[in-house]
Image (cartoon, rainbow over all chains, first blue to last red; front, side, top):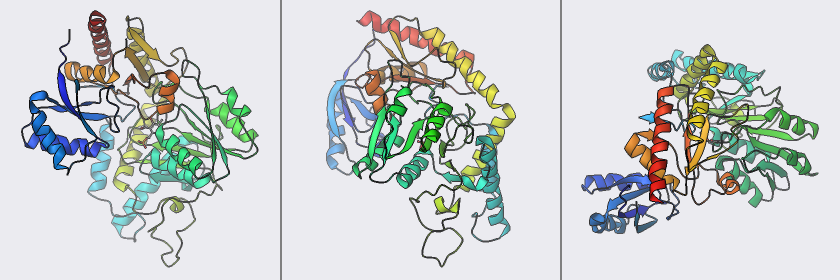
Length: 78
Length: 383
Ligand SMILES: Cc1ncc(COP(=O)(O)O)c(C=O)c1O
């Protein structure tokens, strides 16, 4: 069976924000990747950023900095 | 990577297309801006492409071929420019958001809209079109092929209805141009909207529209035209009327080479190969327990697009597994087709869309079938 983990998932309104978010995470060495938005989270944009929960604090810090717009931050299986 | 997301964009382009873009980028000036050899080369390249596209879609006068950035722009020009408050429009639940959203905008501005429904297999209830015609019906806007189910509409039959009732007929050929033969005269199409980067195998940022001679469309954009500079109005002569601003000459050179490739290879040959790949895939997956297909797979013609789900699994998850574990590119979710998903009852789950191109191989299809089988087995164990 496929192992699913609870992850920190960030959703966005538009693709441009998702890509900017990925770029920032990579620059900061944050583990994670872009995934199709899980259906439990409906979102404006079809891609979401998913990181292990251990990265949640750093992921939140980027979102809270506010220069990259996010739609929401969630914890869900991904 | 096994790329099966050709309905989004064809990833593999003929080498001739790439060469044509590179050549254009190293040689062309700005078409219609002066008479230097570079500017004339650009103007000739673009005119050549216009002429080819006219021939390809049965348009008599190449000046009625307009270049745009994609179908979305063409559809916006056609819908916004032709449908006014008070007009009634008939369209369908099969449409892409590039048709629906411009229509909803017109509805908010005071136009009336009827969307024709589909049956359980996603087939348009074509008989409902005529029943819904009113005194103020101005146009039928219809997709040639659904980007979700791959189902194809009988454009010629609908064209006859439009003609019989004096309605404008606007067709979205995004999924069919380059694979299914289209003849605007025979099909009675007033405005044909196409995009260059899907089955036409051209570069992104190319597309256009074929407009029936004599039909005046109010432009969306006004600006530089290279002619009649001291007139405060944008020229009303086609094709310039709908082409304000510098055209994508580099891309259009590529699109022109793409049409050459399709004509050289033969549109029938291309379609047959794609249909065979699609049928091979459908035959391989349709009996896998838990797999549900969406669309009419008994139809004689359809686009090489196969949407499916595995049990109740989230299409995003399946597509991600295909990508991460099998390196197979598909598209999950809603595919910009909200009404079609409503109609199929897949709003929550979405669907995993596999779409083939001429450049896919039978081996790739077999690998995709194996992947679907393995994932299905895995998910049935889980449940
Ligand atoms: C049926 C249909 N119409 C319109 C479009 C819009 O095409 P484009 O994004 O090239 O404007 C697409 C593709 O996304 C489509 O599949």
